[in-house]
Length: 239
Image (cartoon, rainbow, N blue to C red; front, side):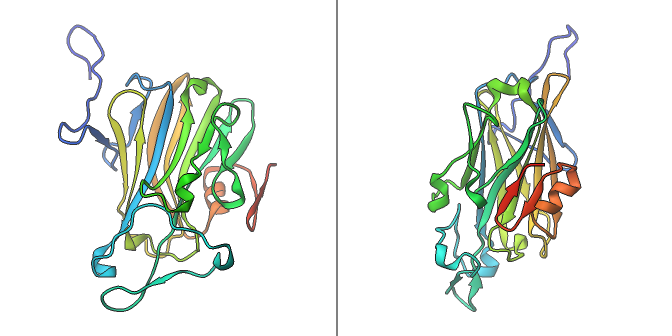
């Protein structure tokens, strides 16, 4: 929206929360027009268990991984029957202008790099139960080298239980209000969710809400968005 004199009006977000919520009705925000297309963009995933499932127990962030039980869901005793703990992982597929593609994710230890390609870095601390959730940093000072970035979430141990969590992905730009995307649609059998897409559209960085659930893992999201990577159990190879 522009005033009569033609000057740009930047969105300030909700006065109560200083956040812009991306929803089905309002799906896109231009980081460039917000003056937020530089510096490090912090992308954070946080969640808590639905209290109706666990009798008041709540948890935010990733869980401690025991290498000896990678594929065994942890059981916690709460009020009522035992429930499966949910371990959500935050990840990002990237495609750069030079044609290079790949993924930044905990699985396979593909942690990325913030100062050299792909200019996307997964914070390692949250892999050990950090209370702030899982975090990815994107170096927007190299925005001209990005073609597109797909931020997605998957359930680490494969237990389909998105409907048991209140999950939110929050973007913290270097300038302006934060952006919030809630994963609040019921998809009880889904194992992965494409949350948002950041695209370089003629030099303008645009964030678009996706929130598309799939019943498979990374390979299914790859096919959905035409990324063209080769996937294997616990490993990834470039084309």
